[in-house]
Amino acid sequence: MAKARVQFICQNCGAAHQRWAGKCDSCGEWNTLVEEGTSGGIGSGPGALKSARKGRAVTLTSLDGEIEDAPRIVSGIGELDRATGGGFVRGSALLIGGDPGIGKSTLLTQAAAALAARGHRVVYVSGEEAVAQIRLRAQRLGVASTPVELAAETNVEDILATIADGKRPDLVIIDSIQTLWTDLADSAPGTVTQVRASSQAMIRYAKSTGAAVVLVGHVTKEGQIAGPRVVEHMVDGVLYFEGEGGHHFRILRTVKNRFGPTDEIGVFEMSDKGLREVANPSELFLGERHAKAPGAAVFAAIEGTRPVLVEIQALVAASTLGTPRRAVVGWDSSRLSMILAVLEAHCGVRFGQHDVYLNVAGGYRISEPAADLAVASALVSSLTGLALPADCVYFGEISLSGAVRPVAHAQQRLKEAEKLGFGRAVLPSGSGELAGGIGAGSFQPTALADLVARIAGSRRSRAEETD
Image 1 (cartoon, rainbow, N blue to C red):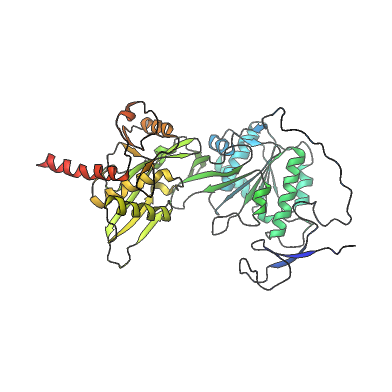
Image 2 (tube, one colour; image 1 turned 60 degrees about the vertical axis):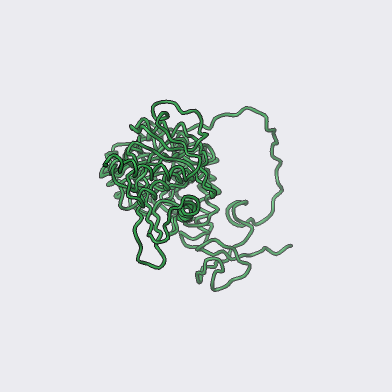
C-alpha cells in the first residue's frame, strides 16, 4: 500500500512545504509549520479518509437548458442589497471582511434584524462577543425587539447541531470565521488549518440545506482577509467593508460575486444609531466643497452601475528639497507620476521644482483611469493659481502621447452631474451624442495640451477684464 504523503502548512500564510523547517520561506515567520496529511483538504471530505471508496457516477447534462434565477432573500437595506446583487442568495456563502471597528457587526446586526422583521429565521452566532454584548448593540440600534436567534459559540460541530434543530434558518451569520474551531483539526483557532476546515464545514452546510451563510473575516495590515486565500475561492461572494477612521462614511465593496456584478458598492454613514444608507453618495462627497479654491476638480466616477461625483484636490508648492515630494491619498501614485510626465513632455508644464500633493476628498478611493483628466486639471489649476469653474465636471483617460481617450458610461456621468446642478463638462471627444444643457456647455479636447491652453487662457481673459 502506498504511503500517505505528509506536508507542512504555514499557519501564517498557508504556504505548503515538503519538509519541516524552523522558518517559513514564503512569509519569513518562525515556528509556524504544522504537519498535515494530504488525503484531506478542499477536494475531499473533512479529515483523512481511512479507506478509499469506489466513486459513483454523476449525471451529465448539456449547456442548453432552462435557466432559473437564483432565489434571493431581500433584506430591505437598499445599499446592502445593491452590493450583494439584489439580496442574499439561498444556499450561498458570503465572506465579509474589514478593519477592526469599521462596523461589520453593526451592519450584520441591522441586516439580521431587518430580515427577522420580514418573517425570516435568522441565526446570529458570535465567537468574539457574549450574548449580553450583542443585546447591548441591538438596544443601541433600536432593533432589540426583532426575533433574531443569538448564540455565543466557537465549535463548528456544536453550531451545526444547534441550527439543525427546528426549522431551517434562512440566514446564518458567523462572526467571525477566525474564532471557529473543529474537532477534525488539532491546531488552534485562527490558524490556516482551522479556518479552512471550519469554512468548508459551514459552506457544505449552506449548499446542502439551502440556507444562506455569511462569514465575517478579519483582515491583515495589508488589507487582505486573514487566513488562507483559498477561503475566498470557496465562497460565492467576497465583500470588503471599507472606511477611513477620520470620516463618518463606510463603503461596502463587492470584489467577488457568483450571482451578480463584481463592481457594485453600497455607501453608509456611521452614526450613534448605527449605519444609515446614503442614497446619493455624490452629495456626501461634495458636501464641504470650496468652489473658488484653485487646485480642485470634480470627477464623475462610475462604481458598478452607479455614477458618483467626488472632488479631487491638488496642491503644487515650491520645493526646497533636492528631490521634490509626491504624496497621494486615494489614487494610484504610479498614475500620478505618469500624468506629471505627460504634462511636462507634451504640455510644457514643469513640476521638477515643486512638491505635488494629491487627495481624493472624503477619504474615497478611485481606481478607474477616467480620473486622469480631472487630476491633470487640478494639477494645472494649483500650479497657475487659477480656480476651475465651479459648475464643471471632468472625466477622461490620458494616454502617454498626450491624447485624451474616451471612457465608458459618459451619458450616465453627465446625467448625474446635471442632476446635481453642474452645467458644464470637460470630456473626451467621441463620447457619443451629448444631450441636455450640460452637453451644450461641454468642452471636448482631443489632446491634453488643448485643456492646458484653455485653463491658461482663463488667466489672460481675467487680465483683459481687469484692464
